[in-house]
Length: 195
Image 1: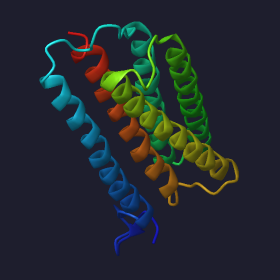
Image 2 (image 1 turned 30 degrees about the vertical axis):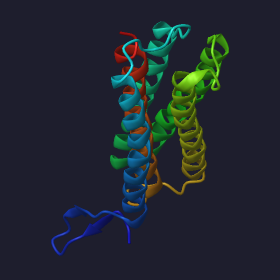
Image 3 (image 1 turned 180 degrees about the vertical axis):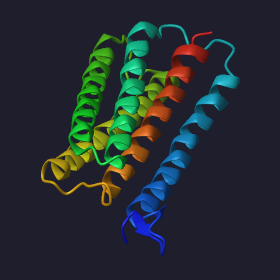
């Protein structure tokens, strides 16, 4: 079934397709997965009078740049979704390509940020939670970049149209999810966590 069906009087009616619904269910399960880690973090945070423990230093400046990159990538991706909804395939491809570049930039800068940190995953519960939570997020961003590259290949091959662009819609749902998770991580580790 296509994402758009015509009624008797030829008005377009949006229907939720299988791929889009599948992505919504997947994102919901991933949200519960991340919620477990946030629950663990805030449980430990609440019982420790000094947090993070001595010896842990995070640089919020670079993390702020990471946040700007990821938020900007959500804007560019949504602009691409709007373009394909208006049957502007070329514009969609440009915005999608820019989103992929921003996502790759985020990954590279996060690896650089890791190289600057003076602690590791084995250095206590704070280090473990930081690397596990941000590392899992980074894996999700990497998966999102791969997914969006596949969508770009579909678009370049002429397989995405106004009426058939479910992969673009599904990719945008996933990408916005990883963006929201990063905002929660940034707030948790770089705003609340640096009390």
